Image (cartoon, rainbow, N blue to C red; front, side):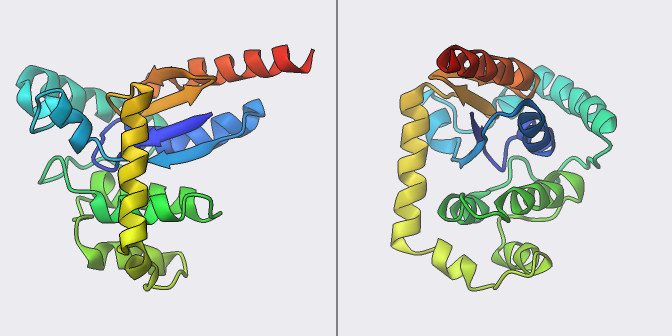
Length: 199
């Protein structure tokens, strides 16, 4: 199962804290897929988050996210800037998406943005997160290489080709499941098809 996430996405925050354990408990292999929502929103005619474009929807989302985060016991502080630009963090995550430290890096970036209102668009913040994981700061330089930029661009294009229009999205057996609340449905789908293959 693929977990498609965007660092500016509110509901991707709790999903990042649930998905690894949920997939592991179910025996479902998990692949982390960072991408950018900006180009996808632009194709839909939006130049901002729909939660900003539609204020009533935004007010509901922030209250709902409070409930979700309270249940998961993770902090929530509405960012002073929303959405924040997660480009740098996305380049790091995309370039190193198969590394063992990637899930924890992703969670710490989300905590910085949505838990503590820190500016994840700044390289200093991403370097601080890398250092907190005992990782070298020069990983950020590698993530800003032309090859890394091309990889994230291609991954975002693949998201669009799959029909992904928001985050988080879980992709299982060519089916897409959109939203933090669809995680278990996606896992069940993956399990069902794995059982069918093993018969």
